[in-house]
Amino acid sequence: MQNPPEKIYYFDEFRFDTVRLSLYHNDLMIKNIGEKPLRVLAVLIENPKKLTAHDEVIGKVWQDNPLGITSIHIAQYISKLRKVFAEFAPGKDYIETVKGRGYSFVGDVSANENYVSTPLQHEPSEYLPVSLVAENDSGKEIVSPRNKVKFALVFGVLTAICLISFTAWTWFSESDEDEIRKAVKESQLYESLVLYKNPASFEEAHLDKYWTTELDHKSNSDRNRIREAVKKLNEESRRYGDETKSEQFEFQTVEINREQNFAVVKTLEKWFIAVYFNDGTLQKNKHVGPYFVSYLLRKTDGRWLIEKSNTARINRPTPRLSEVEILSEMKPGQQFFVKLSGQDFEAETVYLEIFGAGCPESKPCKLSNNILRENSKITETVLDNVPLTLSSGEFRVSARNGDSQASNFVSLKVP
Image 1 (cartoon, rainbow, N blue to C red):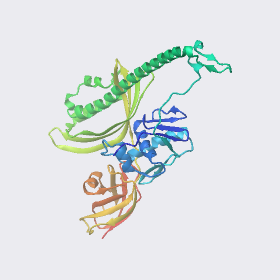
Image 2: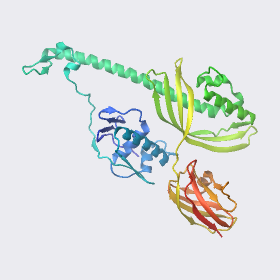
Image 3: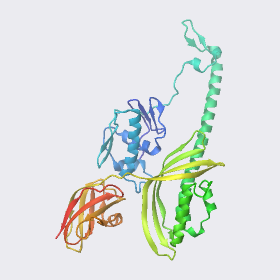
């Protein structure tokens, strides 16, 4: 799919520049929105007051790497956009959710494809020396013909200074941001794909490459967490396997302070981890995330190092069940298949809990996400070809998306 055409969109006091991917309110740029939310906005605003389906947003915003991207990722960026609009235009709701299908930009939009950015106009006397400003008979200020050359020289010098200053600021800013991104991602790859694969080789000095040093043994919580993880792996004779990998590592925001010596970074991460015993026996495979991580970094001796990180879970949508359809003959103790219809099923995390004979309230039977993904077709509204093996009796089935709240129940009776 192609990206939306580059235009300037106007709605109320806002201007959205898809060329520079910038949102303005009353001609002032709104900062710290992030690239992905603005790309989502660019897709929605391309067809105002019309439904834009989840798949279309994913296809255009994540066209280079759509694997694993679902409606929950879009919802996160929609939430960020709504917070921005709520701050600058209270009471206005520009984005409408069409549940289970997508979103619609409902503001009154006009567009300009031939927009050329121009500086704000000011009175000449604001920027020119007094000797270059004259008045005509009516008292109106003009620039005299003799001084046009001087005016051009002064204007050229000022423009050059501004361009040089802006270029230098941009270069340093981008350079720091690149270094910060590199330090964060490389540190996590080192921790999971190098250190935990061979925990017996751990040396404290290895952490100095990515994490700040400590005034005392536990002042950097990340270093202490890594120490404890290595210690536990060694004590239990375990290690990470070669198939361990980062399934998603997406930077949400990178914010650097004015002195450019402290930064806050937010990422969205998902990992696949294979854990082995040292004799080569596989203990378990597990998917971790997606979850948000906030990193605090400090520039020390010219290097960006991690001082602390915090992990926050994503608030997942609560699924809803509407009906269950029997697809094959039901016999106690033998596998049969059903189809569950509903809303907000999340393919990467949805699983089932079953209550009834042999599946008590205190410890319900579970049909894991791995089993569903291996055997069933999963969409946002359907879990098709779900395999079940139950004894005779009446059962209640509910669904969860990872750590979300449980859905409502649907009833199932096995003869």
